[in-house]
Length: 230
Image (cartoon, rainbow, N blue to C red; front, side, top):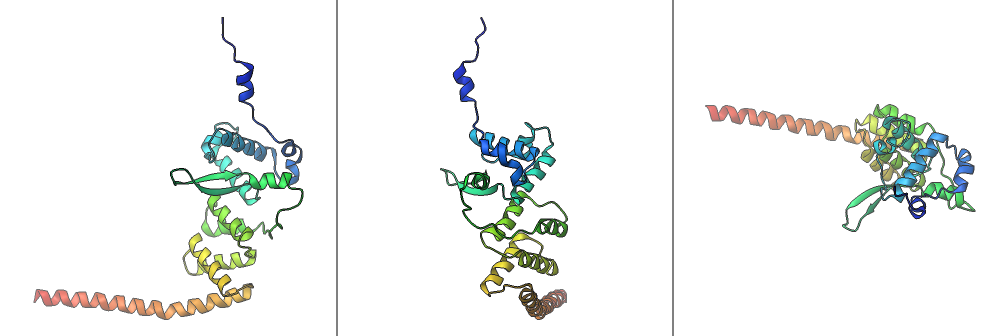
């Protein structure tokens, strides 16, 4: 006689889905595909996987891993979820998806904090300059600038422009620019442009001197080689 699965086994494999999520997801600018990805992330977390890859998620969805990556980026842009870094028991740094922003929007009686100013053009602008889609980590970095550091979107765009002008298009360099402007009390785009202009002007003599010293070293090596051959 075949052994049937017990009712307890069935109950142990259940997952709690908040009613508020199903009733109010449209109000959060979440579509049905976004919703299913969120539920899959929630399910993976309950199974002990806090950072499923797009490929792992796509195995249980009707969309490709590339489309899943786009959904993940969109959810981070919308501040529905974030990427957090934590140390495990072995003090190894691990990344995980956090749905805390989503639960906060659904369950908080009053906003825990004011919503930061949002510029929907900021992410496409970064992708245009980088020539590729932003990674979830890069989107999260921009959200940190906006949310936690309260950087004005206009200043973030100005810092991106400075990085392009200096041919140093990477997030670490942009972050250094923003931190330096904050330290100097730069609050407007005009002040940022003036700071950038002064910095580039200061870099030109130093760069010229560096090139001159490099040329002198090359000449010195050339003549040393002649002397040894004579």
